[in-house]
Length: 338
Ligand code: KG4
Image 1 (cartoon, rainbow, N blue to C red):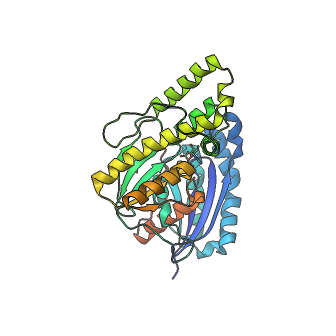
Image 2: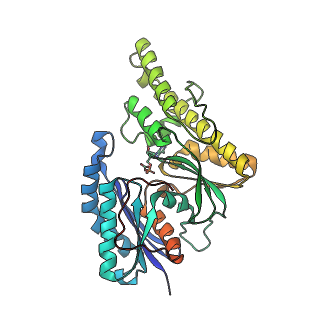
Image 3: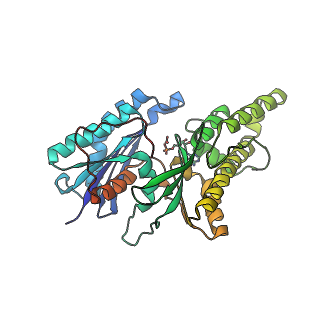
C-alpha cells in the first residue's frame, strides 16, 4: 500500500502544504505573506493571523493538485519548531484536528531537519539524492550551521553562528542601503553587475567551525557612514559594487569554515540548504569549491531553499517509515536545536 504524507509548514511567514506519495512529491503550495514588507521584518502576530486565513485554502489546493483525497492520507507531518510560536500553533493545531478527524497519526518535524532533508525531495523515481554521511551548510534568516548528516535522524552540528545568521547579515546590510525587506534577494540581483573586489569588509577570526557575522555588519555600516560624509549619495552611486563586495565577503566566510569541515571530517559530499542557499553567488561558489576538490555537491532547487512544506513532508515521510509518529498532546516549540 502507498504511503501518502501531507506536510504542513507554518514556522515563520510562509503557509505551505505539500503531498508526497512513496517519497515522490505530488504538490507543494506556498502562500507567502506580503503584509510584513512595510514593517521591514516579520511581525509575529500578523504572521499568525495570515496563517489562520491561508491554511485551509493552502491544504485544500495541495490535496487537489496532488489528486489525493484526505482519506488517502497515511499521516500528517507538521513543523513543530523552531519558529514563531503563534505561527507554529496554527500548523500544529490544524494538523492535529485534521488527523483526529481522519483517524490517522501525526508526525512532528524539526524545521531544520526539513531544510537538510530537502535534498531527498524527488519529483521522479530516478531523482538524485545524497548518500550518508554528508555535510550540510544550512544558511537561513535564523541559522548558519555546518551539520554532519549521518542518517535521516542522526545529525550533528559541527559549527554554528555565535551571533547573527548569514541571512541577517544580508538583510541588515541591505536595510542600511535602503533596500526593502528581505534584502538578500536584492543584494543577489545587484551583485550580478558589481565589482566584488571594490570594497573590503572585515572577516571574523573565530576558532573552530563556528561562524560570526556581526563584525561584518558593523564594518559595512561604518564604511557607509564614513563614505557618506564625503559623498552623501555614496550608496546610490555604488549600489552594485557594495552588494557584490558584501556578497563576496559572506561567501568567503562561509566557504572558509566549509573547507575546514571537509578537511576535518573527510566527508566527500557537500550540500547547502536554507533560504540563503538561493543566492546565486553562493550556489556558484559551492559548486566550484566542490568541483575543485572532487567532492559531490548538492545544490537544492530554488523553490526548496526557502520555507516550504515539501521538505516537511519528506522529513515526515522518513520519520513515519521509522515509526516515529507523535502523540496528540505534543506542543510546538519556539526554540530547538537540530
Ligand atoms: O530559510 P528562510 O526562508 O527563513 C528564515 O530562516 O527566516 O530564509 C530567509 C532568508 C532571508 O534572510 C533572505 O534574505 C534570505 O533567506 N535569502 C537570500 C536570497 N533569497 C533569500 N539571501 C541571499 N540571496 C538570495 N537570493
